[in-house]
Length: 164
Ligand code: ADP
Image (cartoon, rainbow, N blue to C red; front, side, top):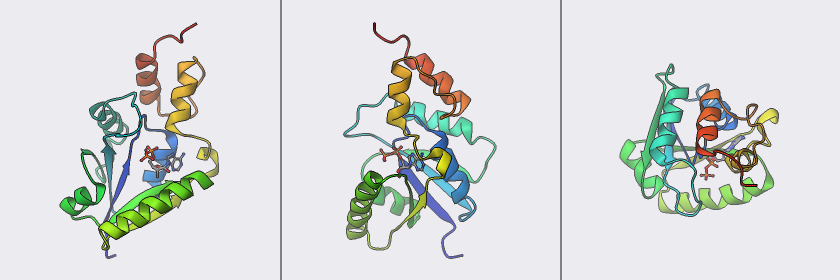
């Protein structure tokens, strides 16, 4: 095996069962997965990067092959610093495809040694997104089936009561 580690970057605001499933499946391919929480420049976030790191660390606390970190700046710079050349991303919809293709092309043009690999979502997670979870939670709806219990608790705590 030439590559032992992959970096899985994302906002993870909050982490979902879709993200967790992707990490667990990637561990069937790579020895180590480094989850890299990005500072969002375009989306307003519910959790701080530190809170997102803490949630992911708690979720994967029993798995020594998963590391959770936080990075600023360009992903490829961070990957180079860590000596990792595989970027892992997930695909759900056509929209994901368009966006991910553009990202993969631009990362390739900046850092030709990097390879982006994609795992397709599993059917039962295909509708799950962090944005959707936040929307449902804002209006007091159930998010239990979409997130880890720790995340459910944290989201509920952040989003108190919906405005009438
Ligand atoms: P970003 O803001 O960088 O897109 P996200 O946290 O929304 O960060 O997603 C990180 C990665 O995980 C993206 O590649 C996204 O397509 C993928 N992803 C998100 N939700 C799912 C899911 N339910 N199944 C598979 N992949 C997913």
